[in-house]
Image (tube, rainbow over all chains, first blue to last red; front, side, top):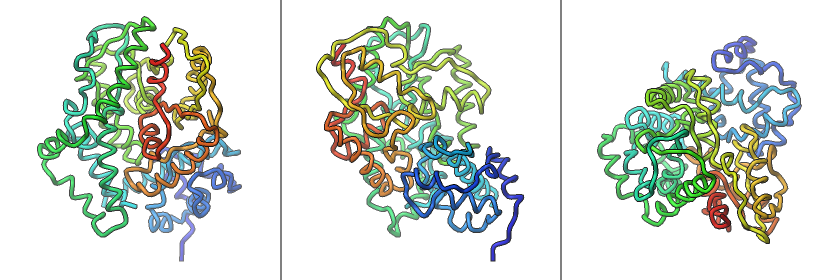
Length: 100
Length: 308
């Protein structure tokens, strides 16, 4: 069972991400994303919002599928910068590796 | 897909020890300027960030990693960091083809011609022309990127460099946006096409500009090359998605998954082909990928030099 941890979004501020809670999960990012892959990045941002850190870490390779092309950042109606949230998660994961 | 951890570890180790993402010697890679009459003092430094020079090596390396993606051998890629750098550097001496080196070096020589024709006061110092480290930033190794950026920015500052002229979107973004943010050192950064000030003759030509993501969205510079084409009398037959809504060539995924790059590239190439016109690229990664896809494509500098 995944434990809900609303503090995870705050933790990501250490990695340059402070827009996670701005996202209202409309899915515009998933619709414009060239990956066309399992509601990416909307689903991952939802995981961050509920603090499902384990879900993210279990599927960390998905984070590196992002091209950081910026289309989602350009089109997000909430200016939540979805691509930058993915970038912040990469930094978080790399930091976890370096600490392990 | 390769394990990102192995790829990041190898790239970070190479950059830390050799200042080059492949572990190649910068002197081996950066030879385009030999035989070109370039000044070593002036108003602004031409700063290539080695991106065009690395393309022949990226082409070779990608061919290799394409073969092993999603095989059991893929996990051994991380062992590359244990190979002594002197051996890695030696391997790079013979790695790229002369034809590819000539092609990508020619793009930089065209840029020199265009700047000279525009009367720009510029100079070049190959030993100060370092890779920007942008790949580490893109892959999420922020600490590795900051360490390298501080090294590069520090070297430039030490030599009194304040103005730079860049040639590709990735290096431009690194020096213009990321270096001030993460190193505290600011440069006045302009792309070479922002410095052009003459009107060539390309009347009757029709092309389709492929805006790279970094010029189209992050730097919002797409209007500049479009205006230059207009001033040269060259018609830009617009692709469906351009400027702020340009499509990615797939390049950023190449080090982790060449298969994913191929998939994204095929979609963008399909869009570009719809215009039926020759494609013009402004980024070495986009150019290399479109060549690989079999496109009728040339670099913006080549087109402008032809019409100068």
